[in-house]
Image (cartoon, rainbow, N blue to C red; front, side, top):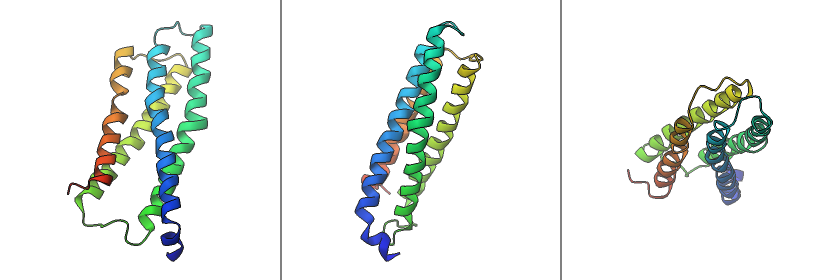
Length: 148
């Protein structure tokens, strides 16, 4: 555990970097879905969106999510970092769990596009695009401000 204390700032930096990369993917993938809704299923444009969506999810967003969780777990395991009785920690954890669920939904929606089975409108994805923003605000405020 002392090694974690010595590496705390490095782990924290890597956690923030991976979180930023994860958020970029969570912001951009629903935007791709908005544009994908506007093209004919099976068209050359649709196939291009499928490649973009797969690469974004599989090569950037999911690895960044895994890194965020791993580095976050290391931070939580570092002695003195988390006051387990503080309310902010529970709110942040809940927001993280919702964000993980949202990531899973994005994966499912990508599969729907991949199989030309999307039934949702561009408006649905425009709304979904706001969810990671709200979760990010909650997480950052809980970690930085620690309001309770």
